[in-house]
Length: 444
Image (cartoon, rainbow, N blue to C red; front, side, top):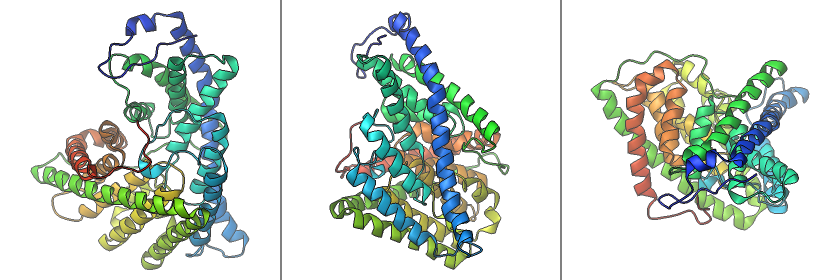
């Protein structure tokens, strides 16, 4: 089995029609379809384990110790433990626990086989104990690694071009249902990996096949186990009015605000990353303590749940929109400040992905602004998600789709506003990032 490697954009590469017509490409599709099932099942198991750890540590353990309800200070020791366990995994296991989330990348190719345990353990410690990060980056790495090393067991001499396609397909399968649609995962990986040119379709087809199969596996396992699909979804979306001139003005404001906030979060996380890495495990524990204190501060001042500050925010997005009327502007602003600082600290030394916390922060910011005249809650929610995602990820197409497909039919109504906010945030954040670069950033 062989497949031609994809050339750089603009370079003369292989003829896509010739590649698709080869026997090796057909065998590649069969292999990818076969691999999609176990990799998707493994991804489902990983998400289920993260959820069980969160429930055990945040709900079951306090009750077992006789507290009745979870004390407001409970996240402080949990996050200290997250810092300790993640710091030990980063320091002592191969692969430094996966990619550094402060540097924004979510796709760095397939990790070596020896690095997979470190990626999994660091992510479980971080995500399970309350880090303000999402599961997409570990799943992408684990899916790529499992796919490549499974194929190497069958065919040790696999060519680089085919290996790259199989790694991408493994990542597609792992995140197939996480973002609510296989198509969203496809756009995320397409933009993050920099695929372009005439060979784009040839390279994406195996991944799309794996993603479709993976989504079916997630749905089937969710129904069979009763655990759900762990997919991004909103239970109810308020009606959005047709965009007006005032809302386009708010789109510009939201885009600019998200670019400033995202740049600040990213630069703070990179600064903290350099200092934490110099001081090792102890600094990771202190960082975890700081995240826990931020959650405690929010609970004591608002009386709401610490989970709104902790974790990725994926499960809290629906409640944030549905219960918008229950939040005062002051509580939303405090939530944004505490979540943003906890997000920066988590990015600096814990392990996970940057997508879901950025969505939650953008949504909270949009809802806070919707208390002002000329902006309804659904439009502010959607524009905030898109603008903050692109400020953190630099993936404009993915950011627009995340903000609009999530809202169902209402997403079509607000799409023009989302596009404006995303473009403003993208251009401004690129200009704000120009003077500095991440010290350890890997090339796309």
